[in-house]
Image (cartoon, rainbow, N blue to C red; front, side, top):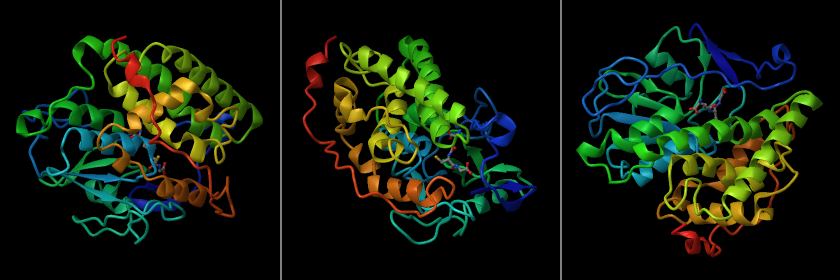
Length: 328
Ligand SMILES: N[C@@H](CCC(=O)N[C@@H](CS)C(=O)NCC(=O)O)C(=O)O
């Protein structure tokens, strides 16, 4: 794990000293938007028109933020028009690499060895973390965005006029509710598991875990009479929650010490997780062995032996019965 400083790679672990043992995720650096006509989006500069075969996505199959973009690429039928590379699951001193291994799809553009090469290609003096996902523009040779929440909003609609599949996961009438759910779920749950796992003081860990499980309890009640978070249709809020829930019992319970309960202990959350997993195409976006290799194999400070636990056994394909809530 490390970062680039003026385009030079430096190997260092997250600094939690300056924040009293708490892990604070840094803002993403590239914030441009692909739009139907190439006009500027809500941040960044214009010039990124939605066109088939123009963009390339760099991901890790382990990363819950990158997973969002893989799901949207799949559900919106963008696989033939947006190419994709997958980094090696292990991320240690050199950061993410394209070394051969489980799930790896090499970089067809630069044949890069390291993911940081892509950041340097976009900006030779880049300073910052080297994260997935990255949306790369093959026409202007730069990074459009490295912010997953914005990449999925682009994938949701920008390519509709050039052949994407129908489907709007953030329709205008639900947008305020989706944004409110995201604002609640991101700090407490999506990033909450990381705040627990990367904490370096007992207090920081305790606070993160308590907030995490309080939020899961709230959602368990919410899903009692709603099939999905906003009701009877799947929205962006569901996909953003899904990528954390699907990793929870295999990784976050053990590796990040989020062990008050497992997702299989919550009847509604567990049924809901299976329901989303069983949506056509989604199972293909989930790779639990790769995901376990990443977390248990990469974080030296948390798991210095790199031993990967064998379990748990989880049957995401078991019937969930939640279609009975469809009209609520
Ligand atoms: N805000 C970013 C966060 C992405 C992120 O933190 N990705 C992690 C993997 S799960 C990463 O690449 N970390 C490498 C690092 O921090 O050095 C997004 O949502 O796109």
